[in-house]
Image 1 (cartoon, one colour):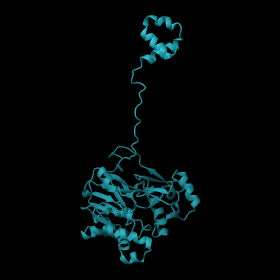
Image 2: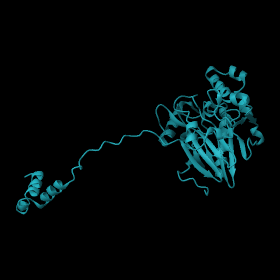
Image 3: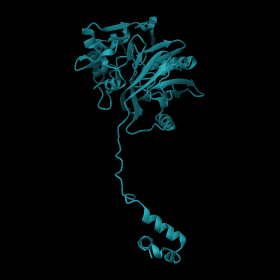
Image 4: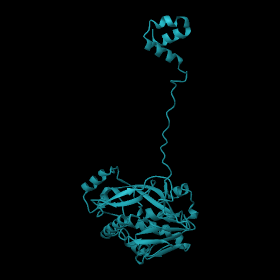
Length: 347
């Protein structure tokens, strides 16, 4: 007698259940009864849950002192490890492997911007690439809105430099993407990238970078909302925010130091392009650097200052959200990312 038939027999002919039980092992009878009493719906297959394959909105928020800091994700770009300089291909691959950062077709590199609400003004540091570098970038506007703000609310845009992945997001269809903002950039960067003679003299592949810079700032220049400063003089482009010269990557590349009580935040732009390589080996440069020798000196100085001062740091090309601290290590430095958590004003 099978389990199923035993169960049917026991239920249909209860008077014979005891007699039949004597002829079946107890465990078999118990299993048969349990099977017979299962609800009819048990065993009915449910449709498999569909994979969502979408990411959470690309913003992350934290308080640094009384500053509300929102990291905004513009997207990513894959960089060829071969563009790293002053080291060997073997060492690059070793350092990438050490951080599980090998990838195909290249090093995945984030592009981040930062929105700082000081309580009296809304300041955006860098604007992302918009449509300048392909479909994997250009999300700053969407993520700014997802974070609860509107482009019209931005009072000031501070550009670390005029490369397209930082400046192209300024404009959309030739119009100001942040219509109430004034744009600030170091004079040395503006003098270089907005100079027609420099553009003409540049190699063909680089001429497009000059065109991007000019197109990005043009509507702000037309509206008299474009300003330059001299970072070497310890300038404050806007009250309470100090520009820190970080020259080398571009002629006027700048970081911005925000201070609130005992806490400080340095938004350092392109000090690091490859977190897996350049923290460990600060002497490694990248082909995008205008003056690669100068940028190595700058990187070593800023990493040392950030570690010594235990500054909060935001990096344009660090893994999103790119907020954290720098710790000096036995070899080079270690990046210590911020931990995900609630927005707290008592950090």
